[in-house]
Image (cartoon, rainbow, N blue to C red):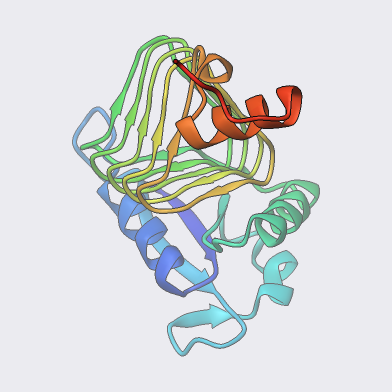
Length: 198
């Protein structure tokens, strides 16, 4: 008999979380979750409201927060943990996860995402569809790496940050490189004139 999962939030991200959860199979090929249901304050697809979370404790073993807002996700996962729910990691089967990567509870890794060697993804993160997190990266708690965003090698993403779709976060050596405009501005401030190569 499979486990039962409650997803907090039945909006767009919650629906993605539900589909990722339903895609997971045990080693015997049977689904990890026999049922995945929503709690949501404004959805006809929900079996109850988020305030009812404690009421469902006897019927559901696991809770996952399907809300994109990083602060709200942090609050709700904290509440679920206090109530004694198990908070899983959900990784879509088409995502690539390095064997040396660490991914903490409450994080979802969506289809076609990549999390590379020696990377740590802390709790409560969203790694959206097609996102790329390269090697030796630290993604701190409750971060959202949006669709197609790239986190280059050797960087740290601060807690609570949302990376927009397609955004690139520079990694090793980022501080060594400056745009031409920034370099000219800093030279002018330091020396009182624009650089000259005559």
